[in-house]
Length: 428
Ligand code: LLP
Image 1 (tube, rainbow, N blue to C red):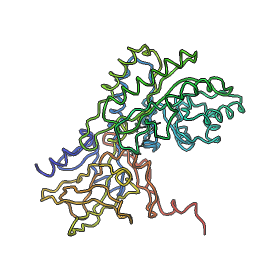
Image 2 (cartoon, rainbow, N blue to C red):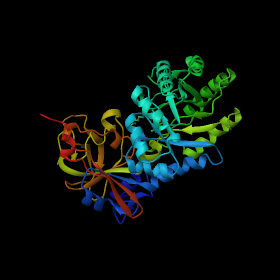
Image 3 (cartoon, rainbow, N blue to C red):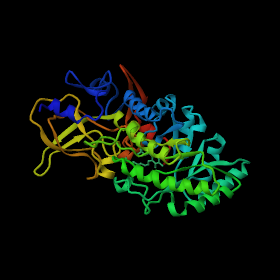
């Protein structure tokens, strides 16, 4: 295989992110040109990949009463949010900060759901003022506090209880959330008591139920199991006279980082909807909270090879992106494909692709076969989700810039963070 063919085979989001005339293109834009214009490291997103991913869900829900709330923690850049909101999505938020981003892009507040285990009173108040659609509540004390806050404001907070169905999502332990040992949700066995408690509180209006079992799920069975467990609870809750208007199945669908073949969103939902229908819940309103599967493969991070450092045991390829830009390898030993922007037809060598940060954990890819020279541009793939939104200023590195591509147009949607931006809040 030539270097170009190899690189092409590694790309997870063709045809929108693909080679043309030996050069990596994001839709109609040349990666080389974007890097030249905006510098590196640079996140480049294809809007078409995002909208295609969304269309798969929308297709799956044709004819159903369903709301897709994009889990903005995956990538909360305003232009990305605007893309999904304009396409009809609601937003799943987890903090007061995310609420402000949501309001900034003009989402209908009724389409906002607020997840998370540690909402503060101030966050609750602000979300109630804004009139969000639902609070996904994760504990009994949260129910009590939310009821008190809403009652003080003369309101009733719409709530759904996040139940923990105790199923194994078969994913990395750090991103698995539906097992008993996790901090998330209300235990399956305690859920009915919690619902009775919620229904009796003056400041709450029980509207739904929700679960989220983990992230980067590549199999269908954990979803089917979780749905069964949740519907068992819905049976019991409705039998207790508490009517649920919606059922929220969370997010979690995985993407192809390294040959994974997760179910397509529409195929997955065909199975899940069949189960819902079979159990008599086909008429309930559905909510889902996908993040990664909508944006993960829409983004690449362009980075320049700074130095080649061959060694006795390892060859290091030092690039200008680092763990502060792309924290997933360091945090989860995650794999991201790394491809040359202009593949060279030369002998490949094996490299550990690393950043300049002062940590051995600062690696982006290990044992990668690449034909590369200093000054070459590389693209770290599958960088649309949980990269920019998890980036930091470690080593006083400014955050990267971001570009959104639509066809043959590219817009700088976040400028590179300057040193003044970084130092603005500090004083001597
Ligand atoms: N809903 C809730 C309540 C969540 O906690 C999450 C993700 C989602 C929805 C969206 O899940 P998704 O569709 O993106 O899988 N930083 C990790 C992933 C953490 C996921 C946290 N919760 C990573 O980079 O793999």
